[in-house]
Image: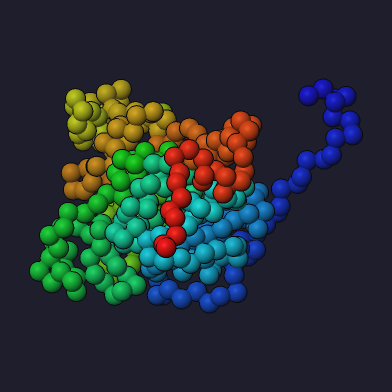
Amino acid sequence: MSPESSVGAPPAAKPPEYQKKDFVSNQTVRWCPGCGDYAILDSVQKTFAGLGIPREKFVIVSGIGCSSRFPYYMNTYGFHTIHGRAPAVATGLKLTRPDLSVWVVTGDGDALSIGGNHILHAMRRNVDLKVLLFNNKIYGLTKGQFSPTSEVGKKTKTSPFGSVDRPLHPISVALAAEATFVARTADVYGVHLRDVLVRAAAHRGSAFIEILQNCLIFNDGAFDSVTNREIRDDHRVELVHGKPLRFGRAKDRGIRLNGLTPEVVRVGPDGVPEEALLVHDEHARNPGYAYTLSQMEEPDFPVPVGVFREHRTTTYEEAVHDQIRRAREGGKSPDLAALLREGDTWEVPPKP
């Protein structure tokens, strides 16, 4: 735009300036003391304050579970829906109001058990939702039953001899549904968690973030190996686009591909050169690469954290509203009754 063309133009709207306190509601937070949900709440409130989005444009949608109390504690609009159905409600809202920033807060039980069907379809449609899945590998609200992410052999009130169920990998589920932004972080990561939230907010499309979250009452220490400062560098590998996958306190180990199979190798004079390592590509069109990473788990591999995949394509609401526009331009009647009577319709005569 030339300087002349900008004369008389209205000034650009100044983004709102918020602080964390602007997103703190007047409700008493009712989670167990020490719960990882507190740290996540703090990070979300701080992140929202810095996004430059008007507060009235945010909506938090939740289902059932400890995590699903989230809308009460955020000074935004919100819906506390029913078990597993938050993605369906959020899809309807986003489709009706594409201008809103819609966030789904759910847990491993709410999203992957009764809500498994809904989360899959929200992801495959590429609805512009930001899904925060709190994974503590347990049913916390209902007092400690094994969940879809609990490990084989997990002893709980509903599996006193150990669970025989094979666990779901939340990241693998999202990637299989071809979610266009997929990431993993943890409740205690602080800066890392907020960085992932900022990137998810900026992404146009289905964003899925698994947040490893500690339930100190029913599953304390489930993620100690990747959250404990003393040992975590040896048990996690950070995914950074364009960087080789190296890990360990001394960065002396890495991941390379042996055919299509990842393997852990030593890096350095007594091992392989850095050039032999797998270089992370979060923008790969095919989600198969990211899916391979999502299957890496202890004890054979370090746990990957960071952004697995980011791919830009048409969102569901963009496609739907474009279809509506084209239908209107084609002269279709907005009369619903007339539309229903078009084509192969018939009338049922009343009973004599």
